Image (tube, rainbow, N blue to C red):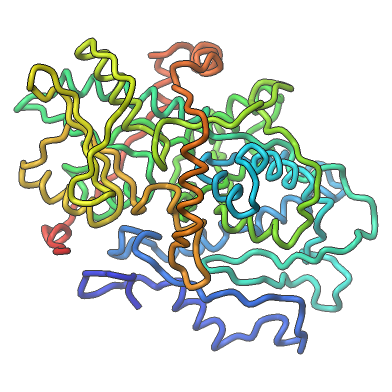
Length: 501
């Protein structure tokens, strides 16, 4: 079975649907073996969509498939249960970092303001151990209770949760800290701004450093590395994505503040798309993290919402934590992007000021081929000084690459996102039961996201403090090591670009 809209003649990928169908046909579930009906609700079978995984030419190896199967709530609840046991040597500090594009989904789904949704989510996660008793290890469910019973979601599996009074007092918390990843996006944007200005000044006929293509979307980056190869990857911005930066903030800076080793922290990312799971697996092990991944588990907004719907939503709300002691986040903010982290708008303003001494207050987008390919220009005396673009969705990405290969691409910078409609339309949220975008819910989310106050990354005093205290200076070798990455390229044949839409 191929991915939806796949254009390749052959595909050696083993899809999630195929694997699950084979399992269900050949091996009964624990509930079937025991003749139990259970308290499970059956959800839609998994489907592969093009926006779930762009690099559809054998992109997921068998080993990665096994690792991806572990990127689910079972691992999260395993740590929760370990924290209830007497052996404190196995206890971990549970940290959850929430992407700002996930909050409008929770607000729309539960009919809350975005601030109330943030506080409700935080309170729920911190009360999770009191809300649920999970069927993990030794429970009172019979002789086969050591086998975890699971409920299938549209893509992955979550534990089936049994809401019942515990037989013994539980610890007073579930998740210990809940953070907002906006501060990580601050670093990603600021480093991208500096890199664009440097590339612009270095660009020449001999050294083509432009256009610069954003690297915050793991689906796009994976496609560029696995399918396109060089010279496309040479145009990728080297600044790490917000998720990667957040991993270092939690496992390095925050761990030091708490006098913890990185491996004593279990870090969960809540994100709007499934590609973030692959990003967590592919991330290298920075020396400062001593062999620990920055993100131990990625759960989509939809997976968290399923857990919340099975739980007690009447828990006490709680303010989101910060990396700075007892200080709490008093309000929700975002960056200046219609449905993304806003790299284009912030880099455009910075470049206009730094390169041409032009102050740009309002960034005006002009739709060209479709609403997911938009252009932003800086003009003076009839001359175009800067030409930026936003290319969302695979069709626009392919058209961009084809023109870039032919030398007919006039843009200095492109914000590239795998999902049509941007991050709010990630496959991990706002989906109908049959796996399509819930357009009504998405429109509501877009309105909620647009109303969130915008914060420019340069205005954050905490970020400037971290540059000095954590990274030893803005342009220090440590800042370069922690905030930037390199890309691996697999040389592909010319047919990789021979796709007609």
